[in-house]
Image (cartoon, rainbow, N blue to C red; front, top):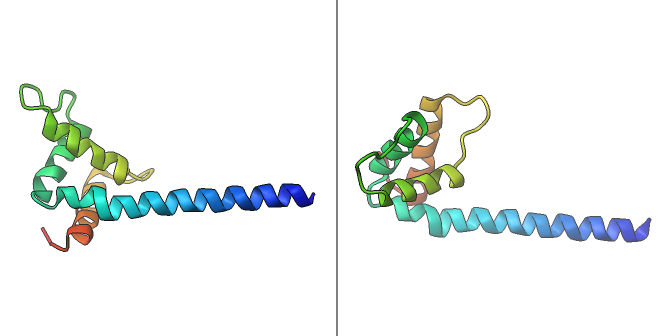
Length: 100
């Protein structure tokens, strides 16, 4: 029983470290990339989530970059699209120190 508690404790510590590291990376390295034009990134995320063919006929790179935001700030279960986009904008604003 003692060994199980040790394994459980170590696993919990590793998982907390991973989650905290991922959150730190998102706040300090990944999200600041969107500070140049946060409005465009949010608009492209909306297009990705609502359009059946987002970015058709346009350059793909801005769409790939904006799609990373969906991973960094995922939509919560039952959250409406306007609420999600507003939360996404708030998260970018917090990271960049700007309001838009």
